[in-house]
Image (cartoon, rainbow, N blue to C red):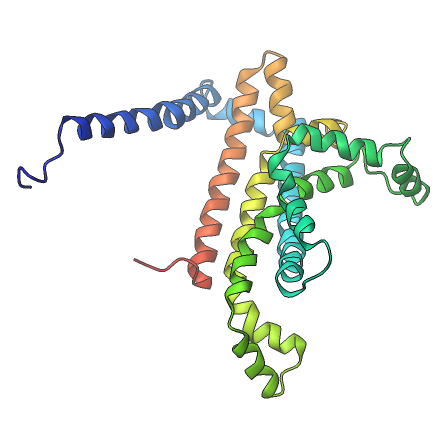
Length: 274
């Protein structure tokens, strides 16, 4: 490298500062988590995450997050379709409501849902009469997770729908394609990578959700206690080893999710091989 292109003292200091910042913010806490979680050996680690309460919490967190991701792919794509394809009254307000879950604390979201679907609320009483319990039950967990992850698929799919050339749709219609076939051949290939990517991101977001869940779930061990709330309870109880072990389990799920997202993006063409 020539002297003219060599980084000066300020550039070297900036690079060193950024490296130290990222290491201190991410790598050091991560290493501490792994060290505490594995401090008593692999047998103790697997014993902690295999304990009935921890195992049930991890399983509840996993299947509700996956369910929410699947629902978001379908319902989020439908929402993006309506926002892009139809000039309905109040469209701007509807679009703003999609972003609202990102703007408010998730604890507030939990309170709102609890007030709406609680046993003394009109909606809660109506659902209870039908035998459906939302607050302090698993449907409440799914509903809260759907609320906090609403924007992910919508905002991923919306710009792609807007960019599709209307001539492609017109050509499909002229060739005799019906609405379903037109969507499958013209729109789906363009938006599928974004919909899947947004759905996977919503799963990752749901895995770590705490604020809304702690309000609406009831947190009954083995029934409505999710892994993030279980970790919080273990910290409060003076059991950092169990909290760290369960957190490592969540971290492993997140890393596996990242690998799945990478594979999906490669297969669908959202990520090209270098």
